[in-house]
Image (cartoon, rainbow, N blue to C red; front, side):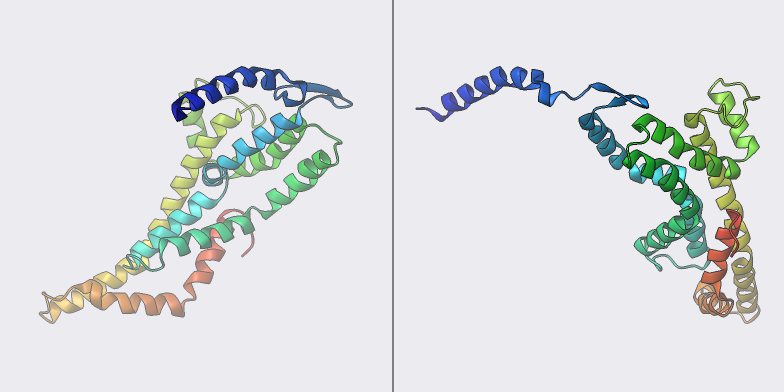
Length: 250
């Protein structure tokens, strides 16, 4: 028999059987059940929601945590020192992730103790667990969000600017938080640029006074900037400063 005929017959058989499978009770995806805490979603729907959240973790990590501020500050620091590819991007991302996990640890612990553990023990439903987990994250984001950015986003969203912290929609708080993080990161980056810029100016003036105009000042200033950064214990100072900007004691 021709292979194409067999393939077509198999597809027709599959199309005939699929509706029966989808209508089977054990394959019901969207269903609700009554519990002591109210209505709860089916396990299959919870798995679907979990897989969707897992696919969004990289984006959520950037817009809901301290990662944005840290990675931008480290990138500006590398640029200020005149280093193009050292440390590599993977190293900067790894450092940013570790500092993010450390800074966000109180938030994670609160979410784990008050949301995940009761949900795992089936004392609260999925919807209540999500609302409980949102509270510490919202509190962290509100502490780091500037009033000017929050007001601007509220105006863009056509929301009243007189809303209280609890009334601000989470989808409005997210862009306001990201804009605030960008502003703070660039302010810290500007302060980091100043000492390295002074070194570049001094080296450039010395070379000009010696008549070495063809020699690039960056080649001469780079060792001095590295020496000053290492002697000042720069990496520890940067980590402590970033932690302090989030209200943590270095």
